[in-house]
Amino acid sequence: MGDVWSCRLVQLPRISDGRGSLSFVQPGPLIPFDIRRVYYLYDVPEDQVRGAHGHRTLESLIVAVAGAVAVEVDDGRQRRSFYLDRPDIGLYLSPMIWRNLTGFSRGTVCIVLASAPYDEADYFRNYNAFLTAVSCA
Image 1: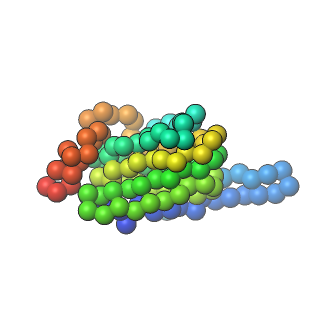
Image 2 (image 1 turned 135 degrees about the vertical axis):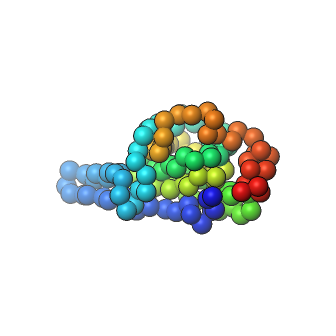
């Protein structure tokens, strides 16, 4: 079962020279899962909330490759907030974590790397159902 302290910022490799910078993500010590799905969020109005769900088993890494976004994580007992505003920093989310993404700056693009293909059965879409599940675990 996840807790907010299992969620952590991950410094991604950054290679820079006169041509610009390059960062990459690959499974290994920094990313503790195989990447099975990639999706991205963009054109999100500044006043909208994305996420607003939890996962039973899915692990993920969120990277704001452009712009900035605030991410609040919640394990049913505690909450933590993170601010993503650099393309070489990711936020690792363990299973059984509720997440809310807010405060999207104009032009934000967030990429999410996930440990499994989409499976609706893995989602908690209702916060009270999430709280019930974490209290029973």
